[in-house]
Image 1 (tube, helix red, strand yellow):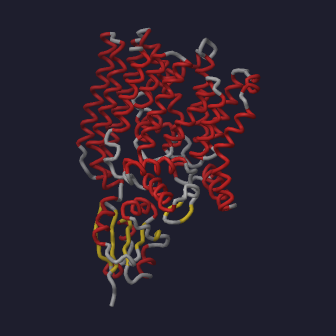
Image 2 (spheres, rainbow, N blue to C red; image 1 turned 60 degrees about the horizontal axis):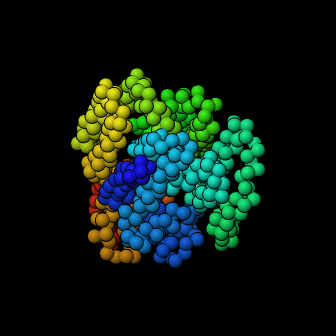
Image 3 (cartoon, rainbow, N blue to C red; image 1 turned 90 degrees about the vertical axis):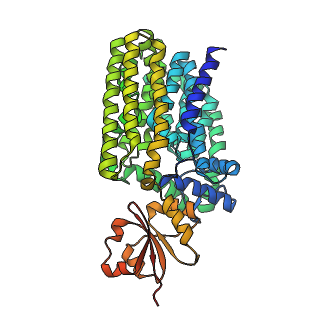
Length: 516
């Protein structure tokens, strides 16, 4: 068997296991995951695949790509957690294959293999690859744009660019173009602009993007433009939607945890890459460094910050780290690898401490899986140092990859089941389904829980926009799904009219009794 074929099999086995293991076993996490499958279901129910809806109303949060992919999965597998997450999982695997395929073209076989394995075993990448959100889909298409550019596959570059814009809007063209232009400037290769097939590529891009955007404008006019482009893109970039937007260094700790266990290899990889930028593979190395830098700076400047936004950094980080690790392992840089192993040990310890403190003091529970992770981390770090000691090059990476596969097993078998009540409204929704007999009784749901509640009950309810006190006063009979802290703000007299049907950690399902 050819080595490249064996590499592909290895990547598919590792990536397939990590992304697909118990993919549908965990309830959808509030509030984001239920939003996507609920919107896809309403597309199917209304037989309208142009205008996204939620709770029966049009909304313009995202372009349709991920909704379409979920709708396709629902057609084959039904409306399940698996269907909601399957597109992300498949495209996460595809993203790893892109890193391997183009890593071969831009560097060498072993760097490509290492890069693909590093990508799928990075914590944030596989976490989002197992989640029903758009970020992996964007990352895959975004990667395709830059890789196709570096390989001079310009028509394909525009295809990926169009798919990126259909996945997450303007960011799918603005950031790739910024990366390409800065790379042309840095390499003093302006003449290449004339080879980019801009006219042909523009037609390809427009053929992919204009039908949906044009139909949306035709159907919804300026409401679509002002909400989608105005609020969800420009306003969210300029104004913080969460408190995290005011923290300029927000993504530094995100990277430390998200690129675990490889982050301790990243800094020396960046340093070596900078030193090599003028050598044989220098243009490709420089492109990767520009790619990850543009993404990092753009979203750090953005006033709305979410953990998942920097995911498009992960493919270039993984390939650059794979290239660097290949050099270190081939050249037996024992001190360098031991130093990186020490960094892995420190970050592992930090993760273990944070998880233990969060479980015990914030959630108030004991999670045995955290202790299992501690044992796993000790094993991974020990393997790194042992591999260096015996100078076994082949085993070095193997131990970390297998360790991260074990991480996924512990996460899905021990940790997520223990925290389900904290992250998903599904248990309360199941209780509601048993007691909700009179379909005309109003149901009020806090905004955060509404997507999951709607998905698991089929009842959209009314968003609790005013305070709970006003809503309770305005109804003779109704159900309320609220946080306990909001219930506690009611007076004793107001509480007397409410029956607590179910308490799920800090979430209460209330019923106001009909007064005579």
